[in-house]
Amino acid sequence: MDGLRSIFVAPWVHSVALLLLCSAYLQGAFDKLRDFPGAVAEMRHFGLAPAAPLAVVTIVLELAASAMVVTGRYRWLGALALAGFTVLASLLADRFWALPAAQRRPVANSFFEHWGLAGAFLLVAWHDLGTAP
Image 1 (cartoon, rainbow, N blue to C red):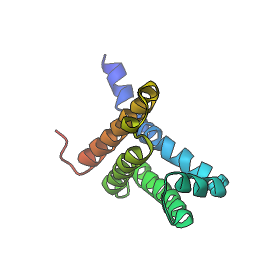
Image 2 (spheres, rainbow, N blue to C red; image 1 turned 45 degrees about the horizontal axis):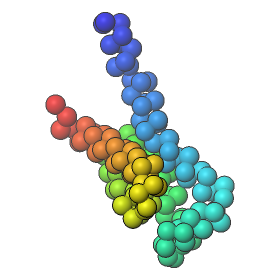
Image 3 (cartoon, one colour; image 1 turned 135 degrees about the horizontal axis):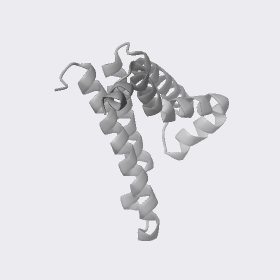
């Protein structure tokens, strides 16, 4: 059991876990960069204006906050930014309560998965600020 524990608590595992936690945001930012007109259309789809500047802000937020979490530089701030962004995005994009009953389940699952991610980022910030037990 000690061998397994020593592998699991290795610093590289921590780094990989943080990278995996940020992977959806990094992938989303790179996708938006590759297809900026699509990113602008996505903003318009959700009724956000001005669409192009908001798409730029989203890309910058996803890249910068992910870099902060992964590198450890102001990790707590990057984690809180991604938690807040995730909560707001889920409230905007995963409005399962406004859908017909037959369409609610997958959107509700996505909504609560996003809230789980937000919780993970809150734990990262909590730990980084030194309040972990």
